[in-house]
Length: 331
Image (cartoon, rainbow, N blue to C red; front, top):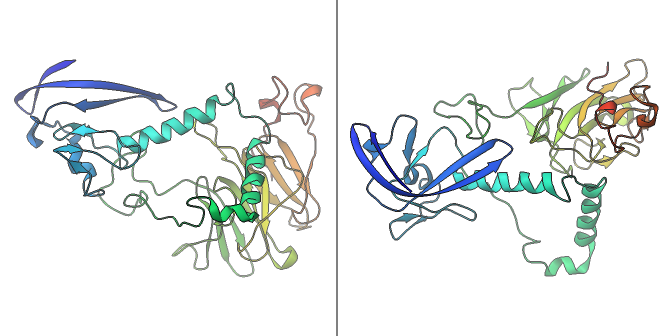
């Protein structure tokens, strides 16, 4: 396809191969240029050259006059104008959208109940087995890819291409506090559990040992020397909202977490509430109903709220019962 237009007062003709990615965010059109005739002056406001955006992160990505990013990146000719309203590359968006599509369509448009918990058990079994040492990469380490997260305190950040969010460092889903020590805990929707000992001046992650970093709510109870409770699963509805693995607790500052019995995996986690008159009694509002613990979050039972059709009470997986079990808050 040939596109002829006037950009910045200069007429440019470009031969472009167009790839359309359809994702939860909408349709994203990615252009792969076949020429090197576009210059910086040709890019309209809000656009920049692909190599200007990507090469600072991956300086070795240019091969034979073309930009080739890291794994999963999309190859584009030098001189291709790309939207600069995002910190991530088109390749990263493509990978993210591919993962979203896979999650939403497998198998047959829905993930079977308990599939994520089963996968977690399989992973732990592999880690404990002697064969784990023979799996390539199993003893490896992780390092950040990119320049770090969006931060509202730093000038110059643009929008994320898919979501249109400006200058954000993350979505905080909930707070909890130890009233005796004034230690504050924060649940980050896609970033685990964090702790601050100075009212937010600095933070330390205490949720790294959780099996998922999707945390919708956090609570604190003084039982067992101090218990932090995390309800996993996003606390928002949306095409990219991720479900959780149930409710977890830690009594040692996050060095280890234990999964509470009773709250099934696959639910969104909306709210943890501790009874101030009896700190062993803890409630969890989830996408699968309201759950109550009487032993400091070691186990929970569904209180079976009388909502909707009787056949749906306590059965979110039944047909037409999903929304009838949503409990988005508890006080």
